[in-house]
Image (tube, rainbow, N blue to C red; front, side):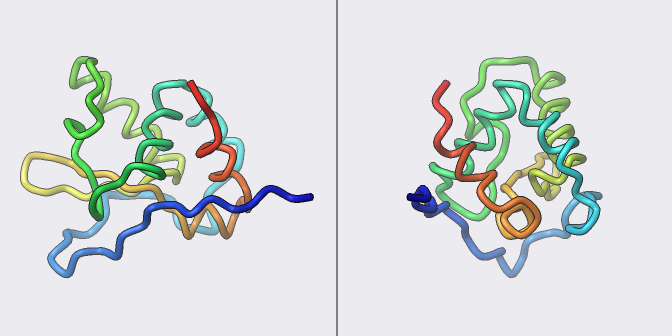
Amino acid sequence: MPAASTAFKVYPPRADAPPPLPEPAREDIRLEHVLAALADPLRLTIVRKLLLEAEEFDHPCGWFGIDRPKSSLTHHFRVLREAGVTRQRQYGLERRSQVRVDDLQERFPGLLDLVAAWHP
């Protein structure tokens, strides 16, 4: 029997949301890049938290509660965005992230269910 699909927390974009930072188009998201981005346990934790614990449309780095230098976090969030896993928007001096649920579900059905089911 196939596993039941997880209900991810997805919020509609705010009317005043700035445009996303550069990211691959849906059709250009490649599985090997997504898997490479998710191979790091910290990045996997970031995506899982966004999927299951989102409280609003998008979240700043501080919301994750990760005790790492800002430069390290910037790197991890950039890897996720450039792989097509997350979308980031610039709000003044901070960048906020969300998972590209619709794009990833369309390209790789079931992948986000695996991420959500993962336990560190």
